[in-house]
Image (cartoon, rainbow, N blue to C red; front, side):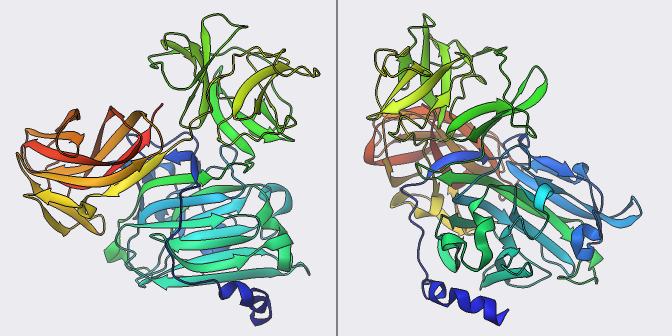
Length: 524
């Protein structure tokens, strides 16, 4: 291993503590665990081959994962099942969502206890064909037992076919919430905790046999009990033990290519949009041959507005963009081809005409981009604008989301910072007429979803979102009684916000409640 590690001596010199700049990242996939677990997750069951290759002691069950107060909760239990004495859950996006390069992150807190081994990690999508470690593995977060350290590791097959790994670790408080992430591009993979880098590996041109890390990977979350690394002494007084995941998000920069661009149920059959050879294909998760049917279900209730392109081929319908997706919908926004119209899930079209994406609701025609504008033209023709069946409009707006921690307010009155059960601090004692203000910078004007992480021990709470100074008022929202000063839930509403740098204010109208954070994400 020392010989292998010398390959990254230069890269190790880059490991200075820094805050990750995320200005260029665009959100392409997420699960916020609000009310349910996304269908993009698949649950594994049993104990696998040799305890999942690690001699783990648990039996994985779907029943050990659920959603509580806007968090995914994976619970490890002392429970006899399937011939084993412990149960837990392991979930993955294999066959549903996979990614090549980008920023992959999750906000997680893990349980402490002898024998516990929680993880947030990735595996190469080709693992069923090439096996492990040739598929590659990237561990974004691993923790064992009661340590105050977390680990980030790359695993792969060295040029001589032997197993190779390169890992780093850093001290933190794993029992509190932290954001664990990697930033992965064709040259480097970097590991972060709360935006501070602690580990890096050079994968330029597959150095040291790292070709695996230039392929698609899928995501995994699990909480193991026992195994080769944590050992086989289990502190059963810590069971049941819970791993909390606030969210999982994937960002990419314009130009990244991702194996699967979207997923949905069509005619009760699972199908995906897959990026292949510069095109988007509609097919089954395990196949490459695209489907040609166009039996799309129209979904009511989607509002209009946003960037739109009028269809000349389908009168009264528009192509619109929301959160990195393209939707084909009626001109009044009342109906949308919610599934069919997700032509291109990740933002960042190139200016090359060769980069085209077939529109399956318009067979034989392709969405193309030139000079920041979208067109649709028939395959095999050279007349770009003349053959266009969509009227060119404004450039697409990128997906956008930001989370603001409550305690970072620049101004405020009547509020108190305190330690938060979800990690860090929250702001408590928000009563009538109390207020806070934060400076934000929004990329464009539009309709935004604003989410609030709140807790309250009483009924009748109410908040008001307003521009700094109190005018205009953007909206009001009831704060529910969560029956605990540190029992958190997430509430939200949609508001129209202006572009640019500005102050937003939050005022208490009634009740007494606490705020952990607020999240602002563009709807359209």
